[in-house]
Length: 306
Image 1 (cartoon, rainbow, N blue to C red):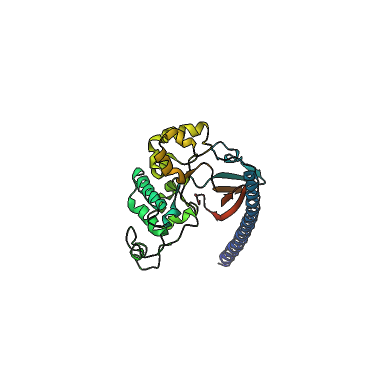
Image 2 (cartoon, rainbow, N blue to C red):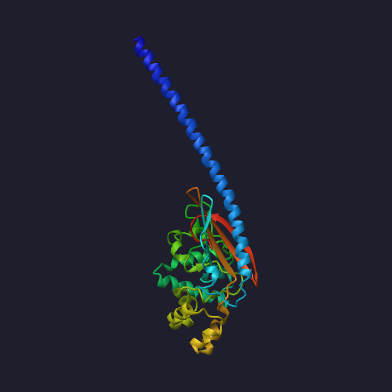
């Protein structure tokens, strides 16, 4: 019995020592992982700052009067760094239907065009129009105008939890994921919607998807295939180039304020792979002449934020 008791004590002590060793190892591993994570975040900040400076410099050298899919800035090679790589995607951010244009006065031509575009796009995508009505009521100012769907309290507070519509312009496109029932369609919709600027709603005709051209510029619907084919060979270098396709002065004059061939908004999506972990950074640039300024910056997920 004495020998058995000693054996049990030895086993218990051994188990205790092993558990202490394991706990110490796990804490050390967690501490190391935390240090690596902080180091990666710090390095990521440095890389992103350098990338933003490089993009500003690169775009300052672009003195063309138009932007096209074959421009040098559209293809930025992957950059190897110690312990991983940095990948950068730079694209225009005004090539889709601008959501923030829904905040314009209801009697304005720009508001009417955007509303019509939403209705047509969601029909073509076979999505319930109630979804874009929710987007509309999310960004519209809280005024005396009736919403397109239920009142904000009914729509966003079904259980009285204080979840209300924003009633302000979007600060990132990803905010749409807060609108009821939009999250499940967000990845798809982000290919056709953008935040838009603060001026007359417009799209870059050299980059806009065919569905966006048809919905936002219905005057061009019968020319969409031709436009896509021509811009693939050579981008439209000025707005008058579209008139040579349309040969309809009235229709051309109607769409003239709503498209351009040079962008003012650009979106840089940065992926940093470091120590087998991925980190994502999102930068919105605003171009004014030859200068590029950072308009928004988000550290987030691998989705489209602008």
